[in-house]
Image (cartoon, rainbow over all chains, first blue to last red; front, side, top):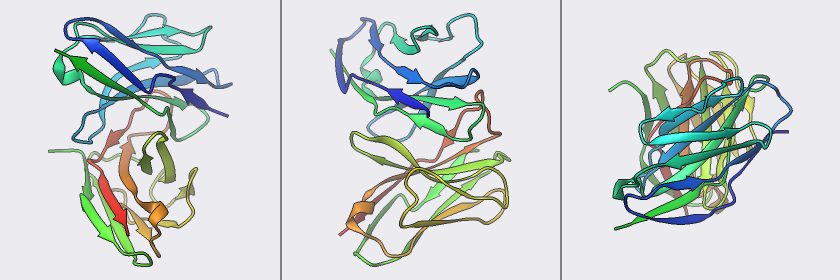
Length: 114
Length: 114
C-alpha cells in the first residue's frame, strides 16, 4: 500500500528565512514520483516541484528545492527566502508506476510572518 | 486559458437533492480524476477514468457516480446528497498514468449539503 505522511499540521517562518516542510512516504514500488503542491487561501492547487525515484540529484525550481533521501523515504520541501505570498497549505503527493492515482498527505499550513 | 474547468464553483444542496459536477479539460489528457478535500484529511480519490470509456472506483466512491462523456469531459453525480458529502471537490487530469506525470487541477467546487 502507498502512503504519504506529513507530520507538521502548521508551521511558522519569518519572512526572508528558509523553511523545511517534512514529507515521508511508503511504497514497495521501485518506480515512483514525488510531487509538492501549494494551495493558497483562494483554493487552487499549484504544482511546485517533482522528483523521480531514479533521479540522482535533488530537484530545484527557483526558491523551491526537494531534499530527497531515498533510504529514509523522505522528500522534504525547502523554501528559501520565504515571502508573504508563500503563506498557504502545502501538500506532498506520490504516484507509483503500478498505479494510476496520486496519494496525498494531509498537508502543512505555512504562515510567513513579516 | 488551457486547463481544467470545473462548474459550478459553489453549490448549496438540501439533503436528498441530486446534482452533477462538471469537469472539462482541453489539454488532450487521457486520465481524469475526482477528489474530495476535507480538513485534516488531504485529498481523497473518489473515482477516476484512466482513459476514455473506462471508470474505476477510488478510495471513497460511496454515494457518487461518474461519467466519462468523451475524452474532454468527466462528470461527478451525487444522486441523493448527504451532509457528509459537504466538501471541496477537485477535478484533475493527467496526460498519462505513470510516476512522472503530474496532475493539472481544476479550481474546485465548494459544496455544502444542509
